[in-house]
Image 1: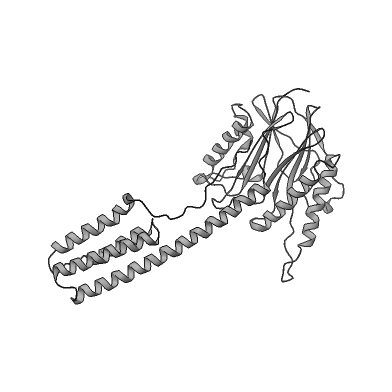
Image 2 (image 1 turned 90 degrees about the vertical axis):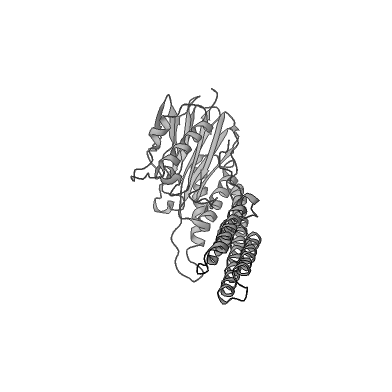
Length: 373
């Protein structure tokens, strides 16, 4: 089950309802009435400029221009009621109000154009996310799955965190990873890792062979991108990852960890970190350690749940600077399936983070074994 938050498009400034326009209209009516009744040496006309300015804060250019026109008409009415339109004081007030209304209408137009551009960019980001991070199936063999992606920024729907799952002839393989860096470069590297995994996960007989293939794909991309367009060296790219194999006919799981946080095994109200004895370096850096990749097995019984996550979860800090205690909070899970686990953790993680916002993107995947073999 995919639990990624479904965001709507970026908020556009649409024409408001009359209930919202009643505020600047009431302001115009009040200022006009008081100005007409005020002593001759009191002039409240400048306060009418607030009406189009207030409208521009919540409405588009058409409504702003309308309120500006109403304010100008009100200023003309005040001039006629008090002296004449050709009175020097009222003439300058009318001219100033026309200019101010024109300015705020123009800026409301620019903002609306900007909002339209953000909406389009967000639509592209959401489409790219759906292509890169395809929703995981709820059932894969004897497994039940749930996943969630939490973006650190409200407008950023994609980043360097990644996950994917695929079926093989005798089991299910799952990848979770975190690309070094941020922005479009990280998205591009994430696409390379995901593409390589989806291409080879069902073809490579062993988990070490699959991870070797993934490492080669990342390393090749790093070699191709070592210098930018100006010939300057780039920073080396790499991806921390955990690749897990869940055989259908054995109550075990096999893990190859490439510099990634260890999975958590949830069983009987306890959370145990599955620490790999000989973790490998991140994908793309295996040349630094020529020993290769090895898989380690752990028991995975019916009813067990394994939680995979990226470092955006465990590195989330609260207002006091304390890291999120994932192991303890996962152990407190009431035990209502993978989707319930992720809902529990996401709500708790956002409560832990200042103002309910993460400092880095975060991804979590929960896998439960349903039946015995």
